[in-house]
Image 1 (tube, helix red, strand yellow):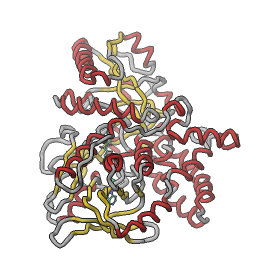
Image 2: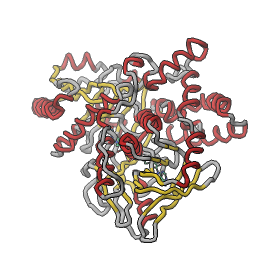
Image 3: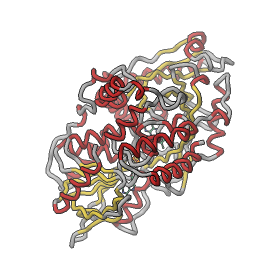
Image 4: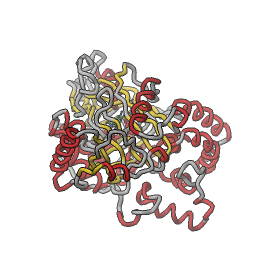
Length: 519
Ligand SMILES: Cc1cc2nc3c(=O)[nH]c(=O)nc-3n(C[C@H](O)[C@H](O)[C@H](O)COP(=O)(O)OP(=O)(O)OC[C@H]3O[C@@H](n4cnc5c(N)ncnc54)[C@H](O)[C@@H]3O)c2cc1C
């Protein structure tokens, strides 16, 4: 992942026609680009900010079938997602962990209904099941979740789902595209669509954000994978196009692991207002969320509302014997769900299906919206199949179901650097040669100097935020600690990538402003 070389290549290709240009570098766009490039199409992906800067770094970190959707009766969605969960674990074993969840139960009816429901969940997963679900009595539940409030507790149901690092998964997808000959670039914004004399879309105009360089790029098909920004791109195609997205905000808080003292996660299937809430061990902390609040305006940096934080804390208080308070929060983050539903639809965002939708405009803009991180691969396959069916590109077979995101599974397992995939051994070697690089930057965060240097050299970070928020998860794990190490990160990055002191100062100012949203 060498950005300068990729931009040079983009310039060289300016006279040529791409088979596919993907707009948007979140889970959806990166999945589409990888599907396309692995089928052999000449593929370009442009992301206006950093990879996964939007929704795709702000998920609950679950690779799941969606127990909740089963309760809503959407069995097909659950089955598809469970199948994709299985494939994702096989193809990116370095980024996805088999996580056990416990649903605490307080009466016989809930014990029966959730045990039966989760047995059915296992059945739907078939041979890609991650482990059987089962009932545990009150004593076993308390021994596995010592911080759970025992009042009225009858027992728990254990089940399994996947847990992952969403933004690291995005980088792995970007790297896999580039390894296969695709061009994937961050900080290049599509500002308009090109059309031929018959009004059909045949490319994009894009702007490199740092230099202002403009690119005019031709393509057989342009794919709009811009999440909550989908309708903005659709209006570039047709200013009168109707809104297609309903947006809902979800908030998470992160607290110290002492509040849970367990490797098991808790799933609360029905909170006071009918939502689902998770408390999940994530890296060295506990992630709790999420909410479901309809929002009108979309932004790259959504901000958690006071009432959302109160809801999470109040719910957690009912279940934990050491109730977390506002001052215990290490980080707060908000994300926007791009729900594929008519904004005029009166159904609450909680009830709107998490299914995806693929649409083709009369001028040939192919848009893919909705869905989940877990189903990104299937969404991508269907999108490229649709481009083939519409006659934009010649038919080629999809191979993504067996496409590994790491070349040697055994090389990285069980090392603390496994999240860097094939890079893990290089980081270890750097530390072997210079042990001072293996010391964590800050005892509140799990990251070392070696990782930051390796990231600068291999993962296209352009800002300190890219490093602190998405290549590492410092901002999400402990916002204040991330701010405390920001100056050191800026110094290291400047040295590696050749930036001056003015750049460092500007970076620090803008990072410290951003951190306020997470505190
Ligand atoms: C709170 C929350 C929790 C969730 N939890 C889970 C979970 O646990 N498991 C799960 O499977 N799913 C989960 N999801 C769903 C999942 O995160 C999303 O479905 C997925 O991340 C959406 O990805 P996307 O690529 O469509 O959108 P995004 O990640 O938002 O990507 C769109 C990208 O398009 C870019 N873009 C926009 N305009 C332009 C332009 N003009 N030029 C170039 N680029 C542009 C944006 O910068 C952005 O990066 C959750 C969602 C939320 C909100």
